[in-house]
Image (cartoon, rainbow, N blue to C red):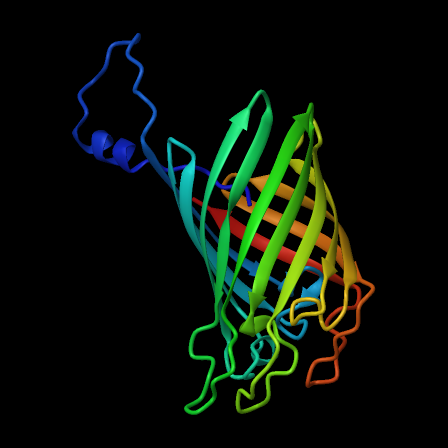
Length: 260
């Protein structure tokens, strides 16, 4: 997500500031806050629909320190089949990491904790929440940015394939996701193009029982604080939802987002 930055310090200073001389330069703030709110026609996670190919409402807020450390919360509506118990309708991602740029190359390392509130009925001891450390590296070549990402979810109960309806004993599984992303800003226009390819290694709940590949092509247009996007998404996997839809097959996803 490309989000504008708002400084808490700057907001406080704006309320009390007196006129400054032309050569005065305010120091950069120690903390910045950014956020977003987005409506998408289908929430796709690594190519697989999390909403049975229906709309989702999403939002995020991130606090970043000048040192490069940051914390973030991201949330989305989801369909109940996403969780192991099949009763949750929300996803919340808690994120902490460190991001720094050296000589034009950006390194980002951290961990995601996926939480599905109000997932399990009384007596159900199956698990849906899990943690996933990540690392990515990106570099910009003129208008084009290339990024490589690796996510590794260590062995944990939530990734097991054989959790029974009553949370029977199951084998813990791990998961690896490797992805490449390319974005290109068209000069002198508000248009950006994107391409993505990723591969998931299992077996685990995240890999729908076996490894698979996902890919996509997209375009976005920025207008002030709004971003309009469209993306074609597909995989070579098969995941049939309780409604009979194949959540892993090709689809076009539209989005409208506002950043602050």
